[in-house]
Image (cartoon, rainbow, N blue to C red; front, side, top):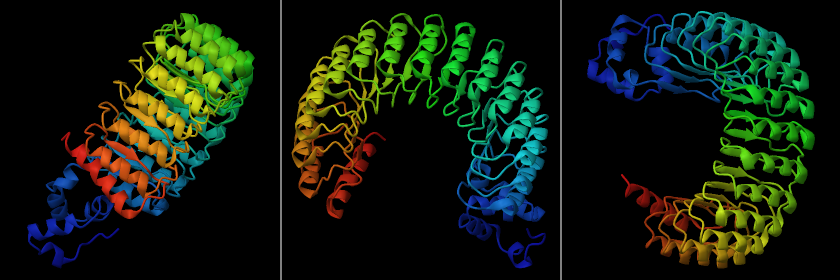
Length: 503
């Protein structure tokens, strides 16, 4: 970076310098204009874009270690920036050192994203050294780097002394069960960390055991993400034991872990006693109908869980019946994800039966279940009386034009649904016509997704004509169709006009 500035620039009137600044991006102002000379600093100090620069997003810019060095030099004395995103910038250990050195002086940055770079154990070491004394950083993203178990150890040691970091993201760093153990040890003493993401780190059941042990003692961690870690049923058992006593954890993600029916039973048993967990994600764990039954039994008595993720679990109609029977008694669950299972029309019929009685569920995801037109009819019948569901995802469910007709008829009288996803459902021109007719009278739907349905101009015209009478739809997604430029522009204008009415 230059140490001198051309005298011709300094001789320019301040107003002209400000005009030049207007043409520069934030990165250039921060790194190439600041700290060049006292006079330019005085001008930029009063420049509105610099004064209000609190967030800088430089993701996917390949700035490398050299670019980070310039940025770090600027950060040393900067007093406005609070969030810096350097995701995917080819930053290595040297670049991490530059950032760490800057953080020793910087007193305003609270969020730092360094994910998807090339930071190894050495980079983790310099960042960890900084964390020991830094008192402002609250969120650190290091996912998709190469810190390994050694890097995890260095960060864990820093967490023993750091009193400000609340969120640490370390997914896909190959820390293994050893790294998980070291981080777990730090959680026994750390009193500030509330979110820990260890997704895809091969921690196995051994790592899960150490983390579960820490949860018996830790009183601050509220969110733990352990997806794709091969913990299997034994690891799930360790976590379940912890859940029976832990009073602070509210979010637990164990998806893609081969938990199986046995592991699910352990977790379900824990839910009967746990009074704090509000979100449990068990996607892609091969729990099947038996696992769904275990969860259902727990839901009958559990009074705290609000979000349950069970996608990709080979759940069929029998499992759906168990879950929906529980929903007729449960009064707290608000979000249920059953996408990519094997429910078919019969399974959705059970879900629809529950919707007629349940008064708490607000979000239902049935994506990629081949429910067909008959399944759509069951849901439509339920929507006529249900007064709580606001989001329904039917993407890739094969409901076709007939299924959409049933839903459209329900939308004429339903007064609560605000978001409907019909992407890739094969609804065609006829289906769009039914939807368009419903939109003329519906007053609650605000978001509609009809992407990838081979819709052409004829169908688009039906929609455009209907939207002239509709004042509530604010977002219409129609990507991946065969709509010409004229009608695309017309639909976009109508959405912009509709949003403008709210301002």
